[in-house]
Length: 374
Ligand code: HEM
Image (cartoon, rainbow, N blue to C red; front, side):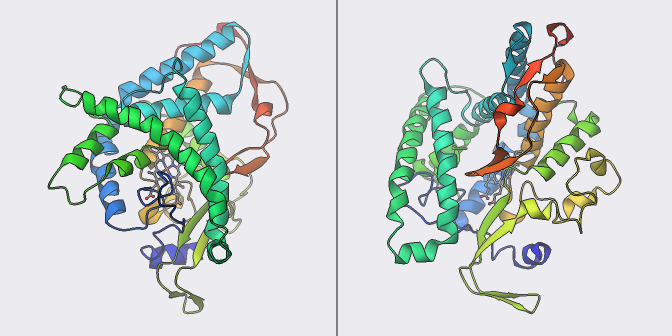
């Protein structure tokens, strides 16, 4: 079913059904991820594909990731020496956020002036909000008819204002250093596009801000890559995809879908479907080592979604997860403090462990650590 819908009606379901809250940075008309498929989305996707996320740019930003990886390693090393435990999810999230910030705005947020904490709180709040947004997506029409949409507005605006303040500061910094000779980060590229009189689409300051909210040896480590793929199959961070049919259509000559129907794709279910996957609930990275690589290509492997609104940063996503796991496994010996519960919870935008504290790990022996060579 999913296969049929995506292949025959990709354009028709390339918009999300998120209601626009006009003044909001995240969910207003400037928000890239919620914007309906059209000129703005096409322009940004092109910019990402041809500038920020093209292979040469990813290669160029390798130094930034190596520095962040080293900092992450040093932190774990320090904990190992002190024989302290760490919460893996929290630390890897910090590491990933730092890498995204360094690649997109040229610096990570500072711990000293409270930026890191502010950002962390905003991300947690926006994750919580996305749960409401999913609810609104599915029940949009009745909520609008009952005039209940305003219930969500205050929370959305609070988070929006927080991001706005933080990003205005960063934008101002970038505008100041405009004339200097420098490597362009994503914000520089967007500002350049914003100033370009001849650009095919004129992006605004709010659109720039809304966009920014959010190796090495990896090709020689096929088993590590297979582990990452298998992990994302069993535990996709985005287990449900929400789209909208722009126009009415008929699927398989039978299912009549009215215009503006919300479509929720159960990615989690698709990637554990026993018709497509052998032992679907088992963690078996080996399945990605076999010659059946095409398994990933057809529409049963969807951790990064698919089609026009699929993740434009799939390669970067694989790199982030690969280097974190690679370093943690290569450099340290681990022992588990409590029994690990693999129970999951769909907390807002993403799927995460229901009991992350049970993933607290002891670093076994400080004498077993090695520096990363990834
Ligand atoms: C393991 C890491 C990642 C996973 C599993 C992932 C997954 C996804 C998924 C499933 C979607 C589509 C959601 C939908 O269709 O409704 C998406 C969209 C998106 N992702 Fe990722 N992603 C990852 C990393 C990243 C990174 C590192 C970036 C940025 C550097 C990024 C940028 C985006 C953007 C901008 C979109 C929206 C695309 C659009 O609306 O057209 N992702 N991602």
